[in-house]
Amino acid sequence: MTLLDERAAGVYIIAVTPFTDTGAIDLASTDRMVEFYLDRGATGLTILGMMGEAPKLSVAESVAFSRHVVRRVAGRVPVVAGASSPGFAAMRELARAVMDDGAAGVMVAPVPGVRTDDAVFGYFAQVAETLGGIPWVLQDFPQSTGVQIAPSVIRRVVEADPSCVMLKHEDWPGLAKISALRDMAGTRRIAILVGNGGVFLPEELRRGADGAMTGFAFPEMMAGVYAAHLAGDEDRASDIFDAYLPLARYEQQPGPGLAVRKYILHKRGAIASAAQRRPGSTLGAREIEEVEFLLARQARRVAAIG
Image (tube, rainbow, N blue to C red; front, top):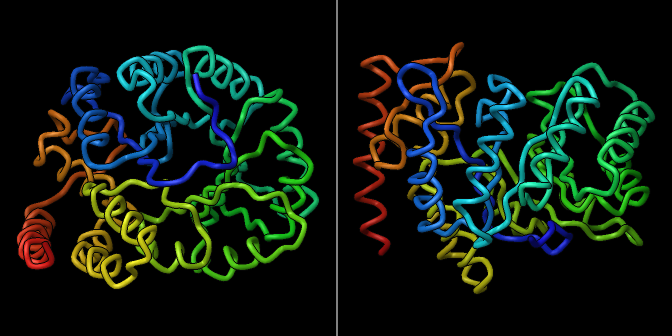
């Protein structure tokens, strides 16, 4: 097992959790989904994230799902498991279980209600103590958690705990935060992978991000943008990005976004059902019509750029 470290880069797809129409975890679809992501350029998988419906799973289900994914991946790419929890006992239990099964690291977001800089730092100090040396990703997603984390606080966390090896950056607008973190002299360099469906990916890469850790029903977009950026072809990176942007924007809607993503993944054959575990959203006829319009338009644009 290779543990997550500061050199992580590329595209770590935030995986959905496949369910049957009755709400059971669909392990057959999970196998198909893993291969779908890897075939389209994922260099890592992140499971049990917010868009993976992690809060709807029991700890036992989370452990079983993680174990199944890790076994299917079979060491081809790192697997990161979300371990956020309102309490540290559950966080410790899940983190140790997924690591014992072969995960490369875990991801933790702050609990809502943490307000001051010292409180945020104190929270993550307790996270580090709870994880006991397990490599972990600090998830900075204020739109969801309501917790604002200043670059100076991220620096304090990184300097205090060498096990914090990555920032999942999802602040919005957040380009200046990436620059601030990269410009901080003397700070231990950690990986920065970005979220928000990749809708700012070209700019984030040019600001110093190392790749993406997010979901989109076309992971090949993010893989293509990243590869073109590495090759120094920013025009090519932008051409690829522009072809997919309308659909990525549509998928980023709060609320129906996951339903859009699962609808497309089902349509592409990655999962057998677009079902979410309750409570969840569904697409109406008008939304499906809009998605189909965007898919057709996207196909023409992708074909045009080769």
